[in-house]
Amino acid sequence: MSRRAAATIAAGGILLAAVVYGLPQQAMPAGRTVQKQSETVAVIYTATPAYESLAALHGDERFPRGAQLMVQREGRSQVFTPGFVASADASVSFDGRTVLFSGKKSVGDPWQIWEVAAEGGEARLVLAGSRDLIRPLWMPDGRLVYAWKEAGGFALETVGLDGSAPLQLTYLPGNFVPDDVLRDGRVLFESGFPLGAGATPEMFLVYADGSGVESVRCDHGVGREHGRQLRLDSAAAGAGDIVFTHGNRLARFTSARAEEAPVAAPAGEYAGDVAEMPDGRWLLALRRPGQKHYELAAWKPDMAGMELIAQDVERDLIEPVVVAPRAVPNRHPSALHNWQTGNLLALDARQSRSGALHLVPAAVRAETKDDAGQVVSLGMAPVEKDGSFFVQATGDRPLRFILLDAAGNTLREEHGWFWVRRGEQRICVGCHTGPERAPENRVPEVLLRTTTPVDLTGRAGPVVAGGH
Image (cartoon, rainbow, N blue to C red):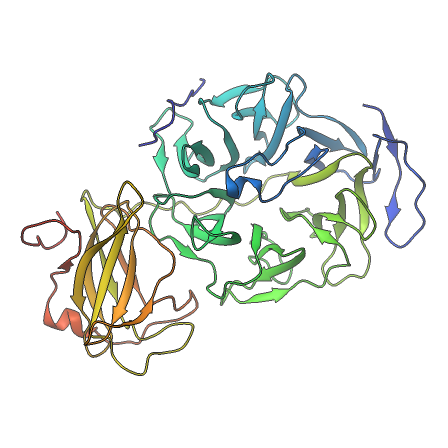
């Protein structure tokens, strides 16, 4: 259950021009916005004098000088959320009729979550708390996911618009910010690497009940952030890929193997949150060489040129979303049991993205953190000759594994933390093997010996099979 305050569930002048990159541009009056006239689809975006893209991953303010949602319709732009001193994070519903956003009605208010019709009108308060609530995203089952600020940073949470109780998705100290809801129902989010506490941004996945948390890909390096999945109902090549910012450039994960590939977009510094237009073009926020602020441009992959959509010489234009219907993601029914613990089966702990171990570990040690943040050992379990082990751990708390040889020396260890949900039964191929690795088609030796997991909960007494 969330530790924040109970959620409230309530029943300018424009200069117009078409500009193609590579052609001369006329100078724009300060503070005015240039728009492309020929667009028929409405686009909502955030305009801000200063944008700190990674601030939320440190628990800080992304818009230190404020922000304002704008909407462009048929080449004309206007404020989308009048009456708000600050607004951002627009998310369009799957039928294209309703928009969620983060907003502040008055100076000094925390960010709260609001809902408004896509054509505009009076906004309705959806979620309110004593701390910031940001980045709301629609989910397929009548719920929404968002980040809420607690004492330790931004945590992920979902809630239903029918007044159902909030459900927390993250169980580590740190900061977690949602980026997208994928077609398979999982939430794509960003955090620091190692998960929660690191300085380098990385993208992760979690199911709608907080189970199955994992990296999108395990070859961590230059920071990855602000991922969006391309439309799966599109016939375009790469439909279903996740496009994101890798450093200051664009990259993508191919859907089959989560393999990263560069995106050959024109030169510039990109701000992420790619939106896909009905004609297959990508709507991008970028800052071209020599420019001070991000602008919005439309680009067709593999094309040489871009078309300017919106530009403001005094503000960054970011977080574009297209007001149009889109495919509803799959709903993820929870498979969690009503237990206090979770069961974890490793098929072959020798396997890893960094290379297979040449010897079989003798044991695995589990660790957690206590309320003071100190590392606590939960005990050890044997590892079978085929590298398999089967353990039980307390749910909804930090967890990591360390592989040991017969003398108790560390062979390989996790440098970050993850969690297993209460009632979760989880199987992994190996230790940090990556999501594209398939298991061998055999029964692990540990299950041939016993179907009772080793108790690594740190509690006293006998293990009850199944974790009840």
